[in-house]
Length: 185
Image (cartoon, rainbow, N blue to C red):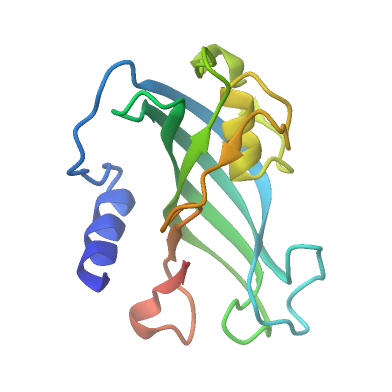
């Protein structure tokens, strides 16, 4: 797990994409969208964070979301979807201590889903606007890729092992080993 995280981190921070070992079947759909001012949360609150329903906000991110959806090889109306994020955080607090701290740095990571959709439903890159509001979460983006509104009952996460798994890294964080702060499931 650690080596995979280091490899992903290296690939994402240098502008590349992590390689996958799974075979890609057609038709894979790929879309790119931009989000600015996205609230970034941590588990630690303090004078440098602000409260939100999703946890203490320590930074706001300006990110590019690179979304890839690949149909399941079994043809069972399931899709493997990965949302890769790269960009910059602008901190108001330290995510480790919650203390006030102002800094910026690179961030990168991904969220993976397996979703089930009604028969005949396919994702479309044209369903995803180039610029998204900061309030759109990763699963909202997946819903929209499949032409559905956020929270749609027609796009359901399949409850398997790593569904919803995420891994993110932030550079330049005071107090983090090597300045690298990780968030992962």
